[in-house]
Image 1 (spheres, one colour):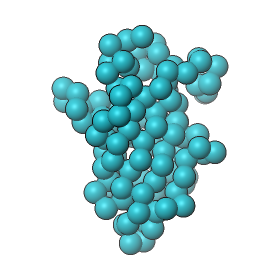
Image 2 (cartoon, helix red, strand yellow; image 1 turned 60 degrees about the vertical axis):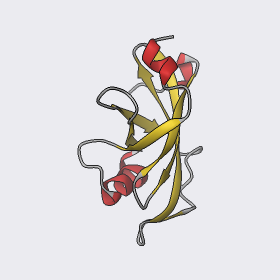
Image 3 (tube, helix red, strand yellow; image 1 turned 90 degrees about the horizontal axis):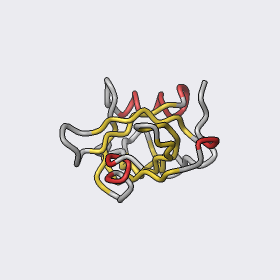
Image 4 (cartoon, one colour; image 1 turned 135 degrees about the vertical axis):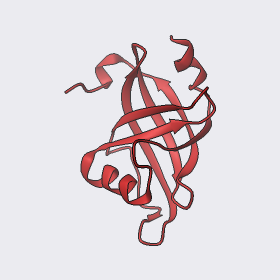
Length: 113
């Protein structure tokens, strides 16, 4: 297991990342695009990961995007430094911040287009 993967496998602070980290962009990525960016903030410069959503494990039922309140549970997969991983994060909409971690999974679980 890569050192960065190992470091990110413990729960730590995250925030919505990507080129335009806004509430509307987060919502669009969750509902339409199917890929979100989660940034682990406790690494040097932060580690911004593009996560392919697992829609069956992601839960937006506690979110009110119109009011910018509540929280979203996000799960999805990616390959980080040759390690197939699942990112699990809980994001509060009010500040687009929360906690997250990575879990190493079998490579077959990571879909590749």
